[in-house]
Image 1 (cartoon, one colour):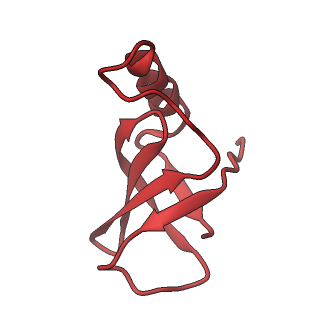
Image 2 (cartoon, rainbow, N blue to C red; image 1 turned 135 degrees about the vertical axis):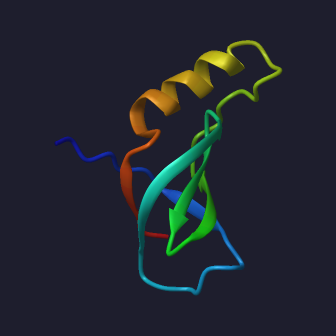
Length: 80
């Protein structure tokens, strides 16, 4: 199994601060934002240093598809 490493900014007020979160990717919003399910709570994760186009912009759909291919419905470990 291949590990994917990204620098991330975690946008989560509902999940306690900790050294890392482990969960399942339940949503990919666009090419640089995904949602991780951790202990039955959703944690929005923004990939740092990635400037992907939004869905309505040129290549936005392809950016979303690329990130989804990499991580949708997979387990992930996020280290903020």
